[in-house]
Image: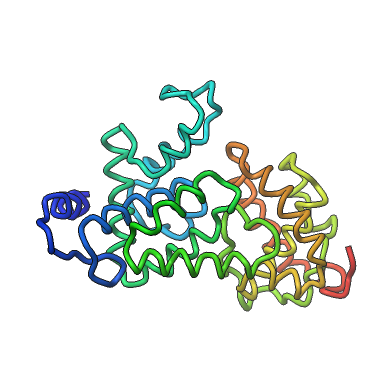
Length: 282
């Protein structure tokens, strides 16, 4: 947090012609500060996906508390209620000192990281172009560093490579070599699905989405690639993704789903084939 404060203060009091580092290259202090705004917007507009990318960062609970405030219904907010409040807030630090310090520490960590451009591209690819935050990002881009604009460009490329809106949280490779992906069907069988049935979510879409995530857990790769491996059609993938994304946004659902997936994976390992692998149609 102290390092982040020093970086921001140094940029704020820099004189004309001075350069600072941002995303692996030199830029003006003004562009660096706009990189800070763009990175703040990326984190707050795509949370909790960013938390999966920055799992080792400290005080993420404080950042999560701020994003929860942003995502509250207008009637629940304590700040200004006029139209456009959220669009103007996602690239500003929170008023709470600890939340602001935690968020700025994460932001500066990304901008200082040699892989920060890649991290930002992955995060920004999860920001739907229909969101107000995306339109605000496009307005910020001309005033940001070359590194930030490269990340924005790469995020557009990544977004176009997927089918439908992205998942709310990414799926890491956790079971490579423990479960044969050939044993995973398009729709999970009853023997594997009871942890999902207890979630009170869209049952059929959860079974389809969980199968895709099991493939990612064993093989890695994108959702689109996992769906192709299973033989899932683009239409079925988009339908499942839209339904699951909406459901996951409800408090606690994303965390409960991750826990259920771990149970499903362990059952799949113990019981073997789930009913025919990729050729089994759902």
